[in-house]
Amino acid sequence: MALLLWILAVILVVSGILALFRRQVLWGVVLIIVGLLVGPGGVSIFNV
Image 1 (cartoon, rainbow, N blue to C red):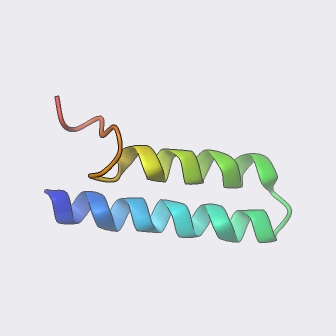
Image 2 (spheres, helix red, strand yellow):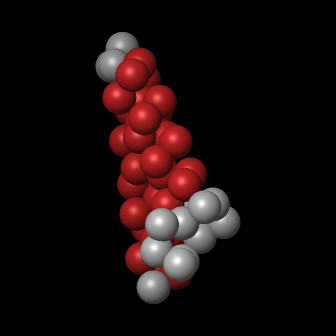
């Protein structure tokens, strides 16, 4: 499960960075924050 969370977090953060380059600042920031929260090192919603 931790591996899947890492993969999801990486995808979200990379998508957020790409969105920032496309001048979609709001989506970029949201995706980066969600990616950091979902990652196993963050405050994961799956670790209850």
